[in-house]
Length: 130
Image (tube, rainbow, N blue to C red; front, side, top):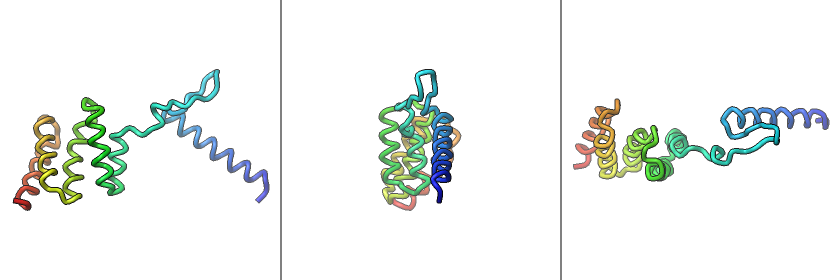
């Protein structure tokens, strides 16, 4: 492969990375050059927990969601994190903790659209593990 083709590929990769960084708000382009916003460079803990759940990394998601709830309890995604804690515990074969997590969700987020689902899941877990 020629040097020109290699440089072309590197340039395309750099442009794509720059566009993604700019789009997500990580990179800021101004008169003083390109700046990296370190506060946005790390993934939001709620997003990270969701990503871990999608990858079936329940233990990691559990830790991430617990930390997120501790650090940002008033975040708009806190209800989802609490709900997902129940699923993490259930997947990790910890039914007692799953029941507690769902109880906490039901108590703390009584107007959430998933409350009835949480109640059903909680009851099913409790009935299978007396």
